[in-house]
Every structure is written in C-alpha cells, then in structure tokens.
Length: 288
Image 1: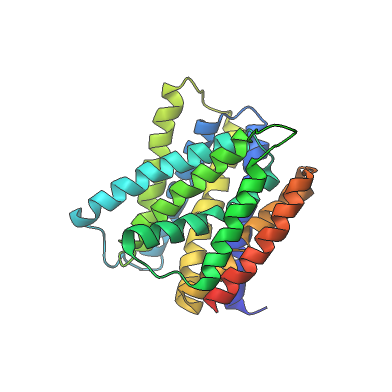
Image 2: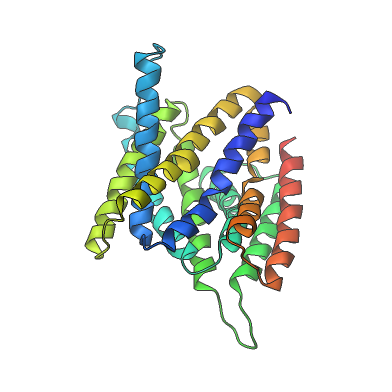
C-alpha cells in the first residue's frame, strides 16, 4: 500500500474504532458527559505532549499562531465540540455502536449543507446525491416503526452530534490557515474542561483510574492523533482525496462493532449500510 494512503486509512481506523470502544467504556460505569470530558482531554493533553516533543527534541516551532481575531471562531468551536461530544456519548449509550458508526457520515452532509447556506460554497451533483443518500440512511436508522411512528432517541442524539460537528468544521475552516495542531490542542483542552464542568454539575462522578486512563488514550488516538494524521495526509494527497478516504471511517466503526461487541443489528441497519456504501462511492467520485 502507498505510504501516503496508509496514513489517512490509519486515521480512519483510529477514528472508526473509537465508537465501539466508547460503548465498552459506557458499559463499565463511565457516564456520558464524563466520558466526553476525558476523551477530549486525552486529545488535547496528548497533542500538547507531542507538540512539546516536536519543539524541545526536534526543534520544530509553531508557525502562524492564533490571535485575538480568531477568538469568536475558537469560542464557537469549543461550544459546538462540547455539545457534539456529549450528544454523541449519550446517543451511544442508547443505541448500538454499529448504528452510531454508520451515522457519522451525517457529518459530511451537515458540513456541506452549512457551508452552502452560510458560506455559499458550491456543492456538486455527486455530492448532492451523496447527501440525499446519507439523510435517507439516517432517517431509516432513527425510525423504529413497529406499527407506530416511533424514533430511536439514541440515533437522533448521534445525528444531532454530527450536525454540531458539521457546524464546527465550518468554524474551523475559517482559521485553518493557522497552526492546526495548536487549534486541536485548544479544542481538546477547553472542550474537555467544559464537558467536565457539565459532568460535575449534572451529578456525574469521576471514573476509576483504569477507565480514566483508557478514555484518555482513546481520546488521544481517535480525536488527537487521528486529526494530526488527517492533516498530514492533506499535505501529502490534498484535502479532497483525504476527505474521500476518510469517509471509510464509519465502515471501520461498523466492522469493529460487530467484531468486538458481537452486536446483531436489526434489518434496517443493513438497508442503511447499503445506502451509505453508495453515498461513500459518490463522495469518493466527487473528490477524485
């Protein structure tokens, strides 16, 4: 495999596996907001250590640091990140992780639609088809049916999380010319502490040391290192192809959910999976 392609696929795997791991952590008495807090703190702290290593050992320094002009976007990113991660963890606790993994493609759809509405970005016909398919698959996953109009709260919360991340992606894009690692560290630390405050204010308690460490490491790998590899891949193969390859992350999440958790999804999941595969195909074609 081409080394440059391997980097972005590794990033996809690291992100994809985070949802089934989060499900396992939630099943071991770690509450949703607390899990959200330590996931982001793991990303921020891990990248901070990595940045110190690059500075002190490798002699690399931060170029184009953030300034006060970026403050509104930074605050918006942190608020949206806190909302998204808490919605996601609560959603995962109420649905199976395969469904949650598949719904992560909603982030692509929401990012594109918000970019169109607020920033007047162009959306190609192929991407419109992909967005329509993603929304269709998402509706199928959230609808429970059983002879009455009933929706899965877990799937709705997960979808809402990815809509928040879609908005956050557009805020991040506005300051993307700045040092990306610095942006990720700030997002991780402040979003983590913000989630921690919410966790304590809602009566949640600290997890045991072992689960705290597992959560911190998961956060670093899935939301810290994965982001760094994503950025590196953008420099190697360009933003468009990077996004296309990263759209494989939900399918890695589904695979690990079935492998490690032994989840047996309902029939609607397989219908949504086929639709999402077609959506990923159109996304890939659009970015070629």
